[in-house]
Amino acid sequence: MSRRVFLVLMPILLGIVLAGPAGAETPNEGSIRAARATPVGRTVLPNGLVVLVTENPAEDIVALELLIRVGLADEKGPIAGITNIVQRILRDRISKNDKGKDRLESIGSLMKVSAEPDYARISLQTTSACFPEVLGYVAAALSDRTINPEETAEIQKEMARDFKDSSPAFPQLYEIFRQSFYRYHPYRNSDRGSELAVERLDPKAIEDFFSRYYAPNRMVLSIAGRVDRTTVLERIRKEFGPLSPGDDQVVEVPWEPKATEKQVHLSANSSIAWLFVGFPAPSVNDADYAAMTLLHALLGEGLSSRLFIEIREKKGLAYELGALYPPLRGPSHMLTYIITKPYDAGKAKNTLFEQIERLKNERVPVQELEESRRKVVGNYLLERETNRGKAFSVALAETIGVGYEYDLNFLQEIERVTPAEVQSVARRYLDNYTLVVARPGGRLYLDL
Image (cartoon, rainbow, N blue to C red; front, side, top):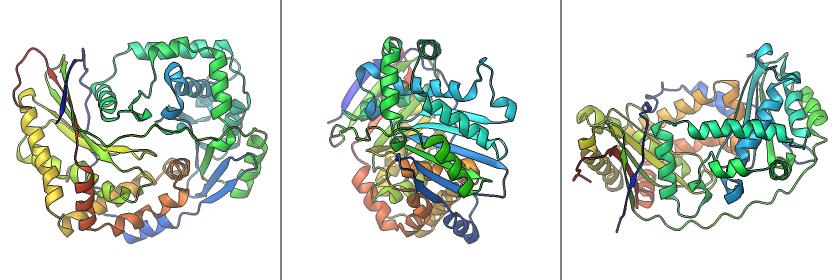
């Protein structure tokens, strides 16, 4: 029995969502062998900091990725959004000099920070000549364990403005989808946190959180580019070695029960309809992850996917469509989304479910599976073509608990997946969907 929930969301902005990448160029065996042979050195400092170094002398760009094992499971109620505050404080500490001027821009360096469901990320790119200087900025930002009121006040004002700004439709609906899909798991919570909680957080609470979770034994520091591994490790030991380890206890995540069918219907100020249909999916450390990755690519990734061909090309029922499958440490989801005309939503949904049933009832032809396999492998190689991609991919694998070797060997896992395994995964996971529909209000719809 499905649960139908009718809500009003006013207004939903019409952000453009592009379809997934078109089928990637077929990678050659040399590219695949080169990816597997990428040398990564792993070192653990006495304080628990994991350091990954990938030497790539061909490019004079050095990427630094610092991932911290802190996520939505560590933010509860009154402190929802606290990781975002800490991330922005570190952003300002790293990028600004004593006079508040941007010191990274002047040396041609770039930085991004984010708070993800399973980790916090600090991403920097610079030249090999400026890398030691940038590394020092990061270490200094982490070494100062005090949080002063001036820092927090500015960040809280910045986040208050962000909460008031209308976000595009996709992130709004994705947040609603997660809140409906997950019953107890922290993944149901907003990545941004709560506006009220952010407003009420005081410097002492932020400082306590920073001291507890931003400890070296909860961090992975990954470097890729024109560096000498021995020299880099010596500098990292000098800069980061004095950091004191903290409590590395993993937060116990509430058990997530088996999914049940749910429907959420929204009325929106728009002239188009959005459909989000999501299914349970294995975590990144599950044995089914590789098979589900191929299923996701085959079903909804790019212009050669079944959904694009059947819904858009053959029937003209979508302006845009696609799918996403986030690599999560805990229970994940495979989400398909369609932007269509309001009265075509039912037809689009029916066509989508026809393709779901097809995956369950029919084995994927070998040739079609090979095409999807090439797409996955090609995208994998493209994502790791840059030093930033190299540094981040191994850091992510290490942070979420599967080890950096998993990322390097992932192509082998993809190559081993068979049509029977794809069908088995479809039967096991593509059930008990969560549906979110947003379309213009004030009209009568009888198609869903």
